[in-house]
Image (cartoon, rainbow, N blue to C red):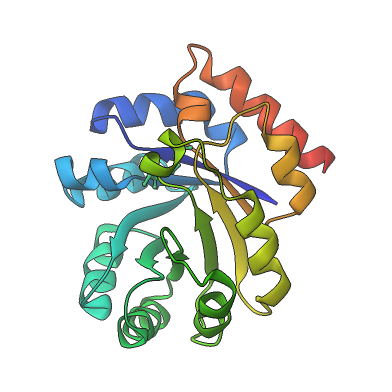
Amino acid sequence: MQLQLALDLVNIPEAKQVVKEVEAYIDIVEIGTPVVINEGLKAVKEIKEAFPDLLVLADLKIMDAGGYEVMKASEAGADIITVLGASDDSTISGAVQEARKQNKKIMVDMINVKNIEERAQEIDALGVDYICVHSGYDHQAAGKNSFEELNAIKRVVKNAKTAIAGGIKLNTLPEVIKANPDLVIVGGGITGHEDKKSVAAEMQKLIQQG
Ligand SMILES: O=C(CO)[C@H](O)[C@H](O)COP(=O)(O)O
């Protein structure tokens, strides 16, 4: 099981500072959608250049033109790029095709997908690398999480790795670990703390203990 740090509410210098603090305890660093909106793919490029040994995920949440957008994120240095599960199969296939050409990986974000098991099965057959259940900020504000959805996709996904994101904190991580996803994505659960290093270290320790 791997740990991904999601950076959403920072500019590029702040992002570099946070990654420097926790890099020993994370496997993947995510340049979140708000960072890409504010700073562009330059944020991906600068983080990859500063931390070449970390995998960098560009959370573009692609909804259309999958091939083209994956190509642009790949040029910026992204190792993994996100596409929305709600998008058309042709968009997801286009993204996968381009990712194969560029030696990159595709994560499908299932945010707001209703028929989660059926859609996860269809998406798994398209050859994506990760399928991620995700309670976005607006769902989190309504007190929701994706723990049940993780169990649901784990029942049907045969090829892709599974991931979970959305409001995961140190106190809820043990429940997530029990469901055994391949990847746990944490944003505010790390970045919201003064001592980010200790929280990331504790999370990595819990993950290693299984
Ligand atoms: O993609 C996102 C929001 O759309 C976030 O990166 C993801 O939800 C993880 O952040 P947090 O742990 O703070 O919820």
